[in-house]
Length: 182
Image: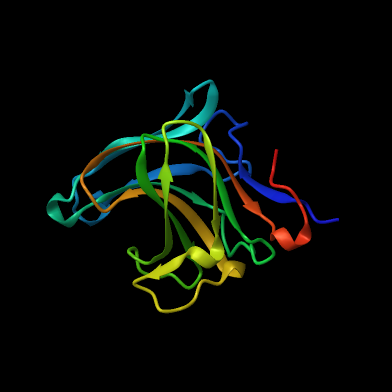
């Protein structure tokens, strides 16, 4: 029997450890000389446990991002080829954010596969199909059998980021007739 979804994180750990056993961390544009500042911490929003990514995104010094990243495995690639995409439960500040995927084909720090989503100021599920992701500074197509990392990013413009991540799932294609996770 195939599971209807794969839990990447559902915040049951209460800390930075995901349901996969890998740890969330924050990455900022400081890795390339930027001055954006961000934090990532367990928190609560509107009565729900979450991971809160917050900070100030700045375009100074050729910067422009803060990001919550999660390696999907300690080493090697993670095979997500049986799934249709990523579902997030998020609570934001009515700003756009990105979800970035990195695969074994991505070598340079600025490369990724990206899609944008809006984060309303209430809890909402957002489904991001793999078919919507576009390569950024990489010409190879997205190979979901070779995933390594996901990242939730505040990027590309000066603004105050405040995004709570309640859960992250991989979901199956609708053709299988299964409902999304509870």
